[in-house]
Every structure is written in C-alpha cells, then in structure tokens.
Image (cartoon, rainbow, N blue to C red):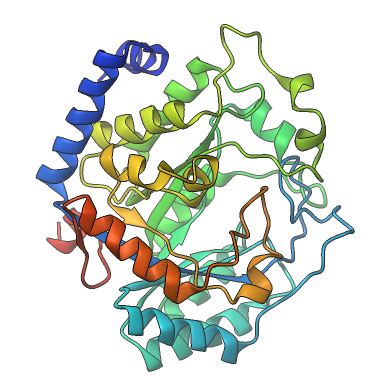
Amino acid sequence: MNRRAILRWLKEDHEDRLAALWQEADAVRQKTVGDAVHLRGLIEISNGCDRNCAYCGIRAGNRNLTRYRMSEAEILICARQAVAYGYGTVVLQSGEDLGMSREWIAKIIRSIKAATALAVTLSLGERSEADLKAWREAGADRYLLKFETSDRALYDRIHPPVRGRRSDRFALLKKLRELGYEVGSGVMVGIPGQTYASLARDLELFQELDLDMIGVGPFLPHPAAPLGRNPKKFLAPAPRQVPNSEEMTCKVVALARLLCPETNLPSTTALATLSPERGREMGLLRGANVVMPDLTPLEYRALYEIYPGKGGTGESTEAFHRRLWDQIEALGRTVGIGPGRRLNLTLGV
C-alpha cells in the first residue's frame, strides 16, 4: 500500500467503503495472528516524571498531583495477580522517572522472572543505553517507546527537551533492537497540528521499522497541561487537521494491521476511554489482537491520570477481568495463552 492509498483511506468517510476496510483488517488479523486476544497486565509503577510534555497530566509541571512510586513488594503482588488471571505478560509503565535507578528496575525484573514465567515489557520512557542494556540483561523481554509523531517540529512542540537533551526516539528504537528487545512503538491520533500527510508517514514508518508491537490511541490531553487548556491554538487548518475521533483511530489501527500483518496490535486504553461503551471492542473488530488490563492498585490508579478518565471508574481488577473475558468470548475470540510473541519471533525467523 503506497502513501496515496494510505491518505485516501485516512480521508475516507463513506460508510460502506469503511465497512470494507474493517472487514479486510479483521480478515488479515484472523489469517495471520488468529483469534487469540493476548492480555498484558499493566502495572503503572510510578507517576513521577521529569518531562513537561504539553498534553500529559503527570507532567513535571503539574504541582497539584500527588506523586507515588510503588514498592518492589507491591509490584510483585501485581505480577502474581497476572499469573493468577492467566496473563502471559506484565508491562511496567511509568512517567520518565529518573529517580527509579538502573539497579532498582533490574532487581524488580529479576524478581518477577524468578517468581513467575511472565514476559516483562518495559515502558519507562527515554533512558540511557546503559540502563536499557542492564535491564535486557536482567531479563526484560520487550520495550515500548512510542515515537508519537514523525513530524519533528510537531514532536518538539509537544515534547520539550529535558535539560537541553534533544529526543531521538528513532535512534533509541534502533538501539533497543540491537540489544535484543522485542520493540514496540506507536503514535497518537489527532494531535493539534497533526496533518493527514504526517499521519500517513507514521503508518509507513510502522512498516519500515518492522515493529513487534504497535500502539495507536487518540490524542486525549489533560486539562492541567497546555494542550488541554487551549488545544485550538495549535490546530492545523481544518482540511489538513486529523481529528482525534474513534473512527480515525480505528482507521489507523486497521491500516496498521494491513501494513504489518504479523505485529501485535493493542486495542488501547485510550480508545476505550474515548468510547467507553464500545471502543475496546471496535479495536478488536478492526485488526487488534491485544488488550492491556490495568493491574495497578486502585489507590495509585487514580493518580496515574495522564488524560481525563484514565483512572477508570473504580472498578476492581477482578471485576474488570471477568467483564473483559466475557467481552472477548462474545466476539467469538479466545483469550491467548503464554507471552504472545509476534508471530515471526514465535517461529524463530
């Protein structure tokens, strides 16, 4: 699929033609990765962050937020909970909290590996090569680092540098691959200033980077962040601005499946937040094969509000797990067993 075709699909609004896109993406999903929905237990281990991203509720400049950092014992309780629910992976996620030392994270990874058979995914932001190497050696299997947008000027606008250090997430993604991680990345859909042309380039990059996992979610700014207070200030002209809608997000999910048939593709929490009644199911019907249930203790979950509604409704982890299982079975799908590696990695090629 060339860029012209990608752009045509991104701008498509005819219901029947979109139905054909959803059906094709779902058929490719079924043919390549099957009906299993793999569950990754998300543990938000810290809401500390040294960055001041212009859309995020846990940005360093948010002085009204109570900060937390989970203990090793608390994290291990969550990991054992993932095992009890039959999940094959835990995802350790945080803000870019440089107070979490290389040695501390490595110790947690080793502890999880010693106590369980879980795959460990890290989503801890931009860290040094020495950190990434040490965590891989400790047993971490995957690293998720979204590049958010391929438009460099737009990226710099929403991600101010830390202490004068310019971000280069594409270089970090390359380094993660060299270190032997399974590599995940992705984008936000509908960032103020994001054009259809730049989003089409993002989709091309999914294929060029040969990603093992691709996370796609709608742009949902927090009201305590600059883009939450005044998003209209940064919008591109109306014909070029990408909307942060459920439909547009699903288009990107479907196109990602067609461009990268073997990848693991989550139906994201952000999509479910944007559309609580059907967002998660729509993602699963339009190419996705992964869901990331939140295992974070409730007292911390409400404090990890990177966008409005991220903390959820206060539903217990057990209740959510039962409801999610029912949703998956109602779609005619099955819950995946084991770590759910990308297909070509499973086959050893």
